[in-house]
Length: 240
Image (cartoon, rainbow, N blue to C red; front, side, top):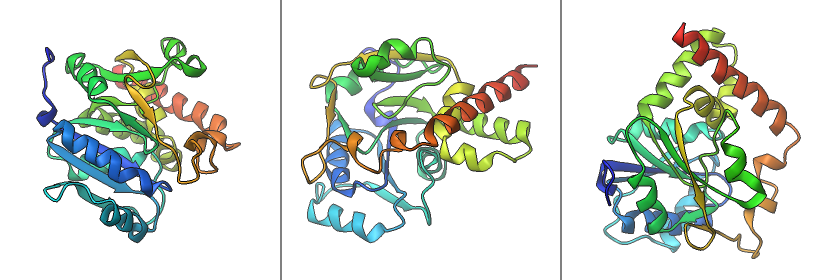
C-alpha cells in the first residue's frame, strides 16, 4: 500500500441493529484484515441476541473486538458514539451491517487516505457512484474512512448553530449531518464481488428489501433533506 496509513492505525466500527447474524462474519473479516481496533455498537436494545450470535458463530479465540450497547436505537449516530467513546485510534473505518468489504476494497480506501478528506466507496447500482459527485452528502455504509474529530466538530457545530433544538434529528440522520458539514471527500467506485459483498438474511433475501431498511420508511427523505440543511448551514456559520 502507498497510503499514509496502515490497517493497524485504524479502528473499525460497525453498528448492529436487527441483523446480528451478520456481525460475526463482519468482525472476523475486519480482524483478519488487521485493523488496530474492532468495535461493535449494538443499537437493537437486545444485546443478548447479538451476544448469542457472537458466541455461536464465534470469531477467532484470539479476537479482541469490543462491544458497546445503546438503551434504544440511536441509528447511524452509533458509528460516532462508538468512535468517540471507545476507539483509541483517530481514524475510523466503517460499513453497514448488511455489507462485507473485501481486503482489496480496504486496501484501496487506505491508499486514498490523505488526512483531509472522507474516503468512501459507492456502487454504480442505482446510479449511486455518479450521483454522489453532485450531492452535498455522502453514504458511508458501503465502506468508508474518516477522522473521528471531524465528526465531533460537525455535531458540536450543528448543536451550537441550532441551540440544541435539532439533536433528535441529528441522531436519526447522523451520517447526513456529518457528511454535509464535512464536504471534503474522495469517492471511489465499488464493484460488487470485487470490493463489496451483499450479505443475506437467514431467509436468503438481501437486507435492502427487509422491513428494517431505513430508506424504505416514509419519513426517510424528509428527515434526510432537513439533516443535510443542518450540516450545510452549520458549516456556513463555522466559516463566517
